[in-house]
Length: 272
Image (cartoon, rainbow, N blue to C red; front, side, top):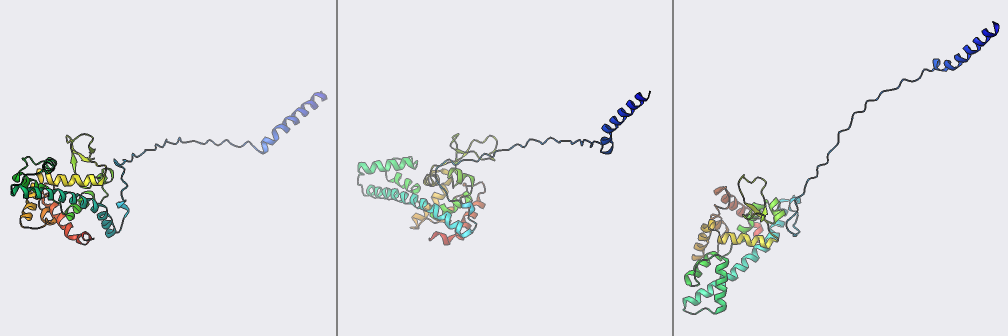
C-alpha cells in the first residue's frame, strides 16, 4: 500500500514538472495576418510616332525666348524659300526671252522650244507654245514673296512645332488624297479620305507649296493680283498676294487677316 502511494506521488511530481513551465509561461497566441492580394499593375507603352524622314530638325518647341524662336525658324526655312524663288525666276527669264523672240518673229531654237514645253507641262499650261501661251505661263511662273511664304509656314506649322511639321516636314498644311501619301489627321471627319502630305526634305515641302500656289485653281485670284502688279511694273507684294488666300483655310477672311497681321508684325526678321 505504501509502495503504491509513493509511486503515485513520484508520477504526480513528474507530471507537475512537465506541466509547470507552461503554467508560468503560457504559449504565445498565434497572430492571424490577413494578406490583401496586390493588383497587377499594367504598364501601358505609349507608341511614339516616328518621323517619315531622316532630316534633323531644330527642336523649336524647347526655345522659350519668342524672338529667338522666330529667328531660328526663319533662318531654317528662308534658304529653301529663296532657292525656290530663284529657280522660278530662272524659268521666268527663259519665258520672257522666248516671248520677246516670238514678238520679233524670231523662231525658237529646238533647245528653247523643249524648255518651253517642259515649263508648260510642269505648270499645267494647256496651250501651244506661242506668244499667247507664254503670257499664260508667265501668270503661273512667278515668285511667292518670302514674307508671305514664311508667315504661312509659321502659321500652319505653329512655328515648326506641329505634328505634321515634325513627322512629315509639312510646314504648309498641304493635303494629299492618295492612301499612304502622308499622315492621317487625328480628327479627320468620318468619310473623309484626305491625308496631310509628308515629304522627305524641307526643299521638297517648300517646292510643293510653291507649285500649289502657282497651279491650283483655288489660288487663281492670287495669281491675278500678282499679274496685275507685274503690269504696273511692281514687285509682287506679300500683303497684296495674301488677299488671294481666301481658299487656303476654312477660316477665309479671318485667315487672310491673320497672315497679313503676321507679315506686318514680323518685318524686322525679313531683312536679316
